[in-house]
Image (tube, rainbow, N blue to C red; front, side):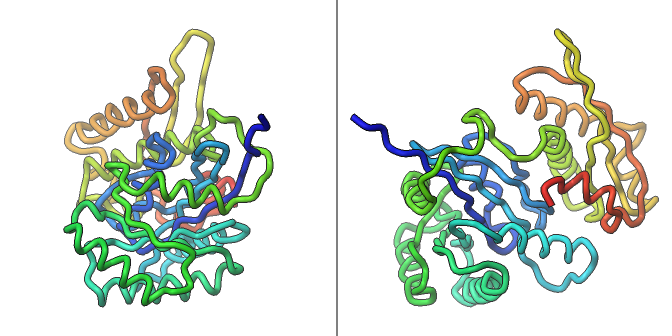
Length: 305
């Protein structure tokens, strides 16, 4: 009996802020690699994850959310990141929050469709409702019927509840059928195309969001500095937390360094879970007013651009 051929391809995930793209990526991969937060615009750069489903290897491009009213350097970078993520993909998953009302969903759908039309050549479009576990079952059917009316050009329509796995098998089957037959490009154990140093920095950035909540200044990020690893010893990881104003530094450090210490402890645990072994983590906070526009930091945060 001949084995089924391998399939490989790229899938872009697009949607407005807080539609659950990162949650979906983590669920599809089966491991946490993308920040999940209630704070808008958590994902700033393309997080390229790798999911396996039967004979298919799927590279998931988690793009930053589209948002309005911001024309700064970071906003422009995020939009450029989305456009880059939509190039040469085999399918696009457009995510909509199932909890939104008709008017809000329509506005989001229109804005994202317009953006997609300027950024990518025609590929199958999958319209996915996220957070369907937070609405009534009858409302889920209403959302799908609404989608069929408003976006008849879509390849398929999906109701997802990513944290509970709802709708994921059908979505994975559909995506697997849309990517071409070809050999896998990555090792089966690999979960991302990004360097481990950058994934570790994302773990720390998530802890900044978790610890500081609404107090966290938007102009903050984490960049890798060095990674020292020796046989039979835990890796020593050095990272720099960048803030854009002097007044932001004390917010991150906290009284007597308590906040930074707590962030470091939680980040160290998250990185250790990612690597499957304990690590030593060293954090340093630096004020860099225009880090968003500095090429050296963009190169660190976006090595594939």
